[in-house]
Each structure stands twice: as structure tokens, then as C-alpha cells.
Length: 254
Image (cartoon, rainbow, N blue to C red; front, side):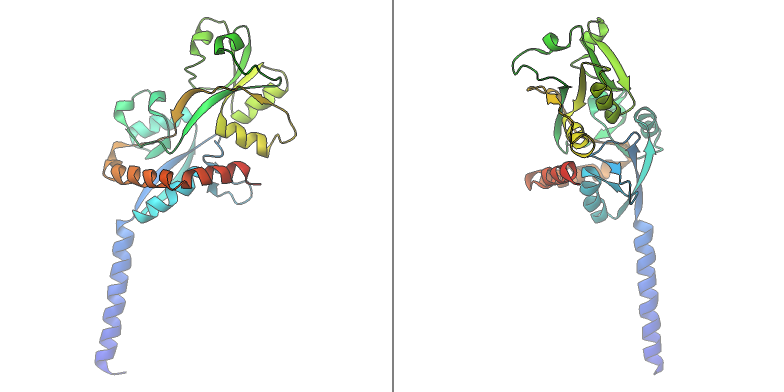
């Protein structure tokens, strides 16, 4: 091979290596909390592959790949994860602004979608009625550490008993075992559990939902430069129906 060809090949190789190194150097890591106990269909670890799957990873993946950001999932519980986010030890978690201790210290995305809590019962519930009529004098299975705005007044006056559990799965098990009169749960999580773990059980849901909340991502302030682009991306995904499609896929996925 002629000398100039050898030099050209070497030059191209050097340029290719330099480009690869530069691209790698520009890639950032984002630590995203995977709640434990996990929250399907939003985000959970597949039992067979151990891969983090669900609506949220599907939506996050495309955006952060476009931004050359590598997402790393870090398992932690709800309370500890929030404190780690304030400290900057992690970068993002699924968290509604109204549930945080110090919302002014965080950045919140636009909602991916909205969800409501419903009462679930072993017996049919009247189509009409007020929450107070249903819950006074009753025991309600709830998830530990969760804030339930609609139920808080009844818990505070001891008109309604709060029976905490470690997960939504345990909530439904306790309801089916007669440990409580109702379970108060996120509609999407309940639908996933009923489809995947309790397909033969007959449970009834209140006709009315309570405390609508947007499913948002809370970021540490250092991610402010990416927030506007992330919100624009979410708006497009909602308009195209992509988020609704992924939700349906994971709720009904066998």
C-alpha cells in the first residue's frame, strides 16, 4: 500500500477514535429511582429478565437516548428516595408535587398522565353516594407512607380505621382476606394487579374516583436545562396516544 494511503487510513482511524471518545465523554448518566416495593404498570422489574420495564421506562428511553443520556435505575423506597433527591444522590423519581416535603427544592415535569384513587370492595357498591357514607365506621387498606387527601379527615377523627400495608399487592390480599372493608388504590396499579395476579377474584370498584393526580417526574435542579425539551416530548407523546397505548399494553400484557 502506498504511503499516502497508509497515512489516510491512520488519519481516519484517529478521527473515528476521537469522535467515539468525544461522544462517550458527552454522554451523561441519570440515576432514576425504581421504587421498592415496585409500582407496575408504571415501572417495575421483569421477573424473568430482571429488566426494568413499564410505561415510564418506555417513555423515558426514547427521549434520553435522543439527549445522549444513559438512564441507570436505582432501587429504593419512597421516603428515602425523596431525601436522596434533595441531596442530589439520585437525579429523578416518579413523584407528585403535592406529595413532597420540599417541592421548592425540586423541578417537576408536566404529567405523563392523570390517575385517580378508587375504593375497591368485595361487595357491590351503590352507584350514588358520598365518600363519607361509605367509609365512616369502616377499615380501609392503604399503603404505608402514602398520603390520601380524600381520606385524611376521616383518619384524623378516627371515624375510619387506616390499615397500612407494604404494597398494593398486600392491600388487595388483605381486602380479600377480610382484614379491611375497602382498599383505596390507584386505578392503573389496581387494574394491573387484578389482571396479572387476581384474575379469578371478583372485586368491585366505586363508580367515582377521588383525588386526581398527575403522574410527574421530579428532577434534581441540575437537570433544569433538559426540562423544557422533556415537557415538549411528553406533550407529543400524549397527543399521539403513545402513552395511552403503552399503559394498555402493560396492564393487559400476559
